[in-house]
Length: 204
Image (cartoon, rainbow, N blue to C red; front, top):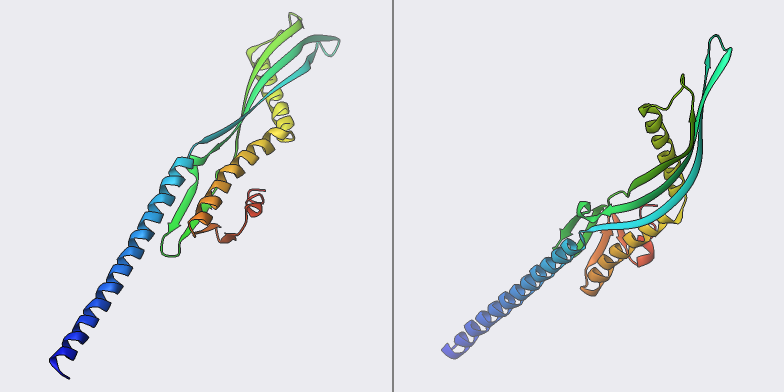
């Protein structure tokens, strides 16, 4: 092999090495940039989703006590009007995610549970009580706990929970759109999310 041919071969090897190195560097830089963008979007979504509802209810409270060997009954009663504000919250700051940069996959590991808060305002009307059976602090606490429990049951059967869940799904769909647009894959635990409809089945 003459010097020209040998020199050409060396130049070809160096060029090939530089080409592979340059392309590999580009791919790594692109992968790093994609991972950073995914991470940034995940952090931006991390917020508190709050759905509010208002409820009114009227209760009648009555308590009777038997006195003097059941010869006499002492009563107390009241009309209880409750106006309550309720919130359903998803704290997406508690959303657990994992970024698998090598396989270009964003994994949703844990989705926070909804938190239902009830803030009742209670007013009492037509309060009647006897000397031997008067209203005490424990009665008001019992009434508050009882009406709160009944309103909670009503809310859990209402549209408020579903509306809050739909808002959660909107945020999760943003993850799907983001990963899809960047050629990444979205997974929930070990399940591949291939379309937004699959997200609607999560947490049901």
